[in-house]
Amino acid sequence: MKKLISLLLCLTMLLTLSSMAMAEDTRVHITFSFWGDETEAQSVQANLDAFNASQDRIFVEPMQIPNEEYTSTLVSYAIADQLPDCGMVNENAVLYFARNGVMADVSTMYEGEALQPMDCITFKDAGVPVGYSSCNEILILYYNKDMFDAAGEPYPSADKPYTWDEFIAVSKRLTLDENGLHPDDEGFNPEKIVQYGCFVNNWTWQLEVWALSNGGAWFSEDGKECLINSPEAIESIQKVADLALVHHVAPLNVIPEDNGVGVGIGSGAVAMTTDGTWRLGTDFPTLGINYGIAPLPVMKQEVTSCTSGLTGVFAGKHQAEAYEFVKWYTREESSWDSLVLTGIWMPKSEYYYTEEGMKEWLGNDAYPFKDIETAKKVLVDYTMNYAKPACWYFTPNTQITTNEILFTALQPVWSGEKTAEEAINGIYEEMVEAISME
Image 1 (cartoon, rainbow, N blue to C red):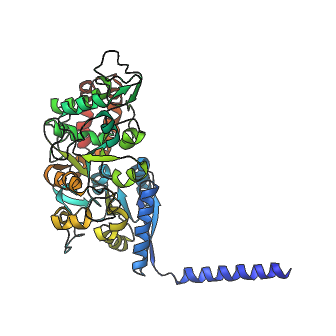
Image 2: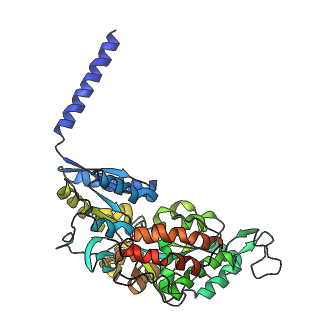
Image 3: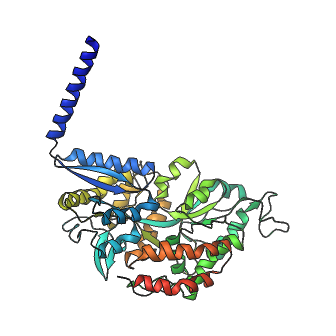
């Protein structure tokens, strides 16, 4: 009985202390929504902990939402008037949210700041900035050095990217069936491939770069005209599909997910993969692959796409506090150790793409990719000379055109049931109508 009374007294004391602590917590509690895997979640939490410890007025709580459900979940919250106070926004939903009053005005966010975000990662509606990416990410080529060594194949160059024909030829030399034969060898069995030469990520938005490389585009630069039915844009999609269907150098990926590295060299059976630079920090540290990086292959013009999710403030009752946190969070210095030096983010400010800034970034011992000269050429020079903003920075309703209409229409292209021309012509009018919707 004495033990029970002591236990009850201790419990009462703990509850009292907890209540007192809650009563004394006068900070404004706000929520920050984000997507990502557990590695990214740990990085985000580390940043929130740092901010929460840096002052005594605001406390930020995380809200993790799966990437595939992120936009639809935020739409549901908006309808129910229960949006988080701030958070990441999928690139393709930024203009949609901005036009529908979901986003708070951030036009003065970087006023007076020493470091300004690059123009290529600024979201604009009719030329007017409505948001800024949290970082910069570009599309590059990853390759498995051990597979290249085994084939006696020179590594992809950081100075001179493959032409598309060279990319196919190298991929054929790296593709093997169960008898060690290559696609051009007599007796090659495309049903029994044990190693593929390449995988070009066919997650829908990542395909746009090939239209640009092929001399075309998906949308006009003012975001008002759909150009995806041009011969150059259609041909670029078909060329990607033919890597698997005709050349037999890439695995089929009929229903794409945002998993280029996973389907590609991360599977252990693919020698080259195209994907985003965030993979340097999210995937490769745990894959155990002896890998290198290079610019994307070139169809006609050297180009890469740049993008990154926006970190923004949602319209609501804690806008001032959310604005303060987001401004802090999107400074490179705030995410330097947890996101930039881990390789998950590339800096968004042009300073870090100068010789002095690169020393702090790529020259830091903590940065996961150790070949500084290659990193400079592929991550810095490639960004500054050849990066173009993905379509959602200037085109409205890409959450419909790319994520819904185009994603569905292209599935029979990847399986070979339709040509790219048939698929695009079948949905072109729907695409035109979608970008003109208010």
